[in-house]
Image 1 (spheres, one colour):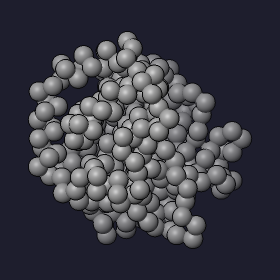
Image 2: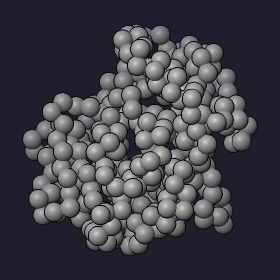
Image 3: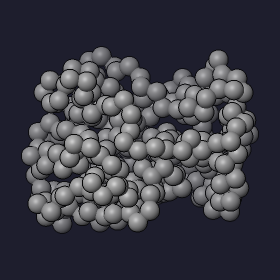
Image 4: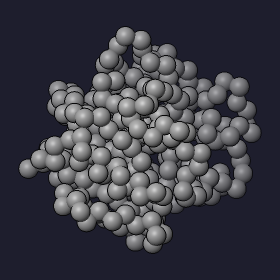
Length: 313
């Protein structure tokens, strides 16, 4: 039986990137240890990846667009292995990376792991040439200069943080970089990315739930994964969906007073109205999720902010 499921959602990836990513996984890791679950989130016909040459790949095509968060969650539920690795579809890998990832998550199965995110693109095409390293993140709950007209992206937003010089493995407030490794048992315990739609807020959602449920978030900088940065995504995402995911996080895992206060800072425009209507439509399941999280959480959001010196509004 395979040890880990590598989950890769994609939508309209150009330049055969999905194929190249999968091929590079096979080139840098032993295929006796992994399966790959690729989820095509209803790409246009010309962007459907041809992965028939890789017998260990389960290629699933959504009949309608679910979005990044929901597609990743689907992959998590379909996995039959002990461990999970969630990636984007435009990444490159260093030899031995999977063995290091498995060592980390086997040693600490209640930790959500992330890796060094090496910037590719903008003239840098190979991991060997990459020099810009991003190392996990912190969470900005509210821009201290924010007001009621602030963009929604300045509320409950993951922000890259500086690396700790000389340290290889350490605890971080938030994973980031679309390169994280978890145990299947832990994902099931914290309900993975259940409830999110389209794109956005995935890393803060996983990170906060992990920490408040008694786990940790860590980075291992020895695991280097190259990520192709680009100026724009090959698909459109409605702003209301980004707002909805932030609202969903506020409603399900934050104390009611804090969550409603953060929602109150969001711009009151058409996107806000659409997102709030969807929140109200899903109010019953949101309350069920909220009660479940309250039953498993061992630490408060105040404990989290005190631990990482993060300000709440």
